[in-house]
Image (cartoon, rainbow, N blue to C red; front, side, top):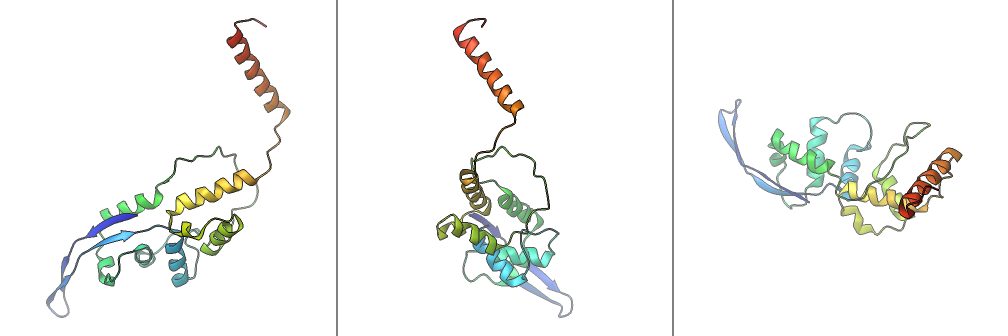
Length: 180
């Protein structure tokens, strides 16, 4: 969860020639599957899909991430570029210590990922529903762990097997202090 503070802003309306005071607020933001699902319901397109989002779509996602009740919509219009950088850094954070040795993917382009697909993955792995409120990257890592643990072991090439045996033999020779 990310906490940010949007300060109050005083704006001047050119047409009415009056100052407008916009109140500030402290927001609790959650970059999660639940937030993405709200956003996709509104925009009817994949959040994790290709392409850039408009400023309106980005601010709409910040609203979807908001967990603080009763925040007027104009508060979201007053988010500075610096605050958006903080939000983007939070969204890009790994949020886990898990890492993977990835082999390059061959074949067709990746599948378009929507919130429903992620919910499907959660259901097929029996991942508890409360995880929809986890940071999205942490949830996707958990799903990837399930996938890795459930896939059959990859067969290794004869070259990989020979290299492993060679390293193991070198290690044993060092441990026993022999020349073979």
